[in-house]
Image 1 (cartoon, rainbow, N blue to C red):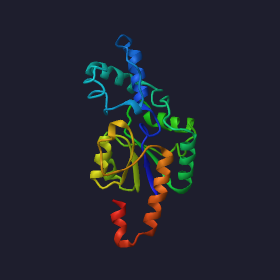
Image 2 (cartoon, rainbow, N blue to C red; image 1 turned 120 degrees about the horizontal axis):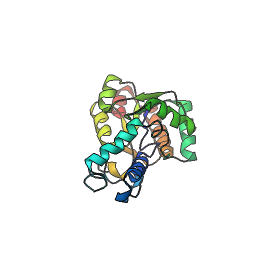
Image 3 (cartoon, one colour; image 1 turned 30 degrees about the vertical axis):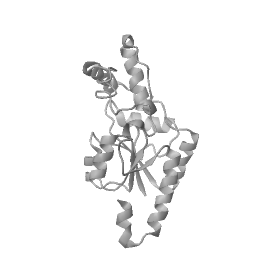
Image 4 (tube, rainbow, N blue to C red; image 1 turned 90 degrees about the vertical axis):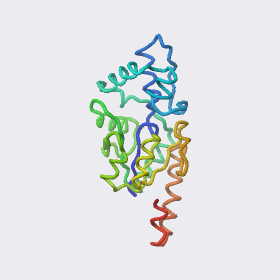
Length: 213
């Protein structure tokens, strides 16, 4: 199978990287950095950001300006996985095509993303695609992925709306979404994928499209 793997919220802790940078840029705000597992609402300009008092819209823009200009922000994000997850990815790599697809933007973002994957000894660091801001539009133009895994609520709904099979990487900010398969780790994703492959292998042609949806 061809697997579409997300980066942030899946293998990289964007929330911790962003909130740490915000705390450094605005020390008087006494921001306590937090990771994806503590982010109750998606995004920093609404909910978890401006509305909660973490950042004003102008402060948010300042943080993003630093990210866009940085050679190191994306490559230096803290990892979200453990050794068991890394081994699971390598096993998946031996059976499937792993494609890293991200909506990141900024300076040398593809190279930074590849660098993160290689630095942490994850497989297939050369297969990185920058999808743009709307992964739904991306998969509509590139309908060649058997399964996508993502944590972003908007991206999950956009991809699903155009027929992409999506598994949710569980985070607090996406728990309002129902009707999807959900996993809490890369290792659990491997278990789910093996189970799903067995179902597909045993399906009749008449039922195959139903299980793929």
